Length: 53
Image 1 (tube, helix red, strand yellow):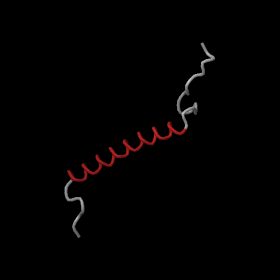
Image 2 (spheres, rainbow, N blue to C red):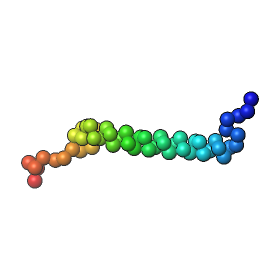
Image 3 (cartoon, one colour):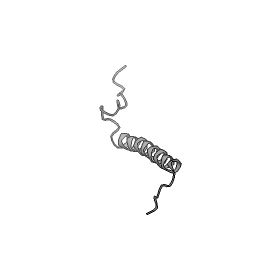
Image 4 (cartoon, rainbow, N blue to C red):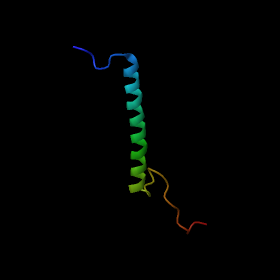
């Protein structure tokens, strides 16, 4: 049975690409959550009303 990842260079490249996609996906997922819940104080402070001067 031949190994799929023949060299450690291939394995390292696969891990690096996988980690990059995880970071990229988490970034866009955070942007999506912030878009759907913009005024949630647990995420960020919403736009302040003009009553406070």
